[in-house]
Length: 234
Ligand SMILES: *Cc1c(COP(=O)(O)O)cnc(C)c1O
Image 1 (cartoon, rainbow, N blue to C red):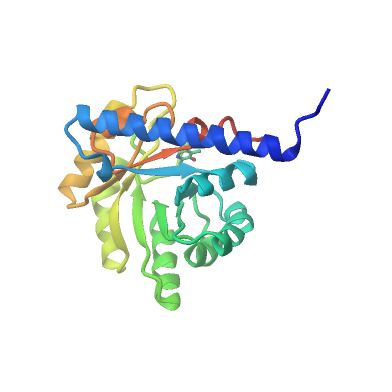
Image 2 (image 1 turned 45 degrees about the vertical axis):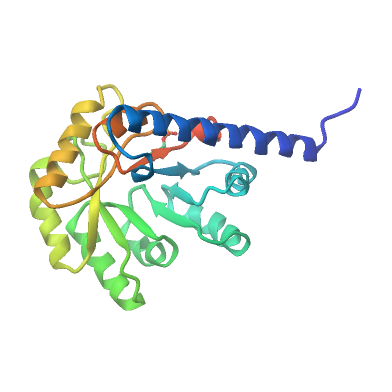
């Protein structure tokens, strides 16, 4: 019996991941059409956290360039190498950020989607000024007011957005992660409402299980991990 070689396995992985990207892209296009939106107004952020390097590289070979990571340290270990090989990569931080990692995050990421408290906003503003990197940021809103989840409470969002703007941060939009056990639609609708009344145009919402609903409610980017790469390690 002949064994599958690493090269065979790898070409299969590249094919599988290309097929997943084509499928998710088509589903975004279909949802966009259904809800009278333009597919090009919805960015697919491929969430590569805890995925093997070979899978991430398959996405890069497919031509995908926008990725989300939720840990600074993990992203630091993975992305500088890929950036040497592939140009045009946009890396977004989508996970909670500790203030002692703010400097590294500003140096590594292109967009920070998880700004959620004054102390962090202040440090980010300071580090961005020091590095001359005015990154676009999203404010994370804890729409379900879950105690274990990051994000500003909906009732404090307007004040916090203003505070971030006053600090000089380039606030472009809002991000949310609805409670796992609830229908996501009301959370997406709430995020949109908060964005509209604050003059914000970008909405980062929707994951593997609910990105089509997010498109319906106005998502301008969806963060999809397992539906593209399969179940995560660990
Ligand atoms: C992991 C993660 C995702 C992707 O979730 P999937 O269900 O695998 O698509 C999206 N957003 C955030 C903030 C995440 O941490």
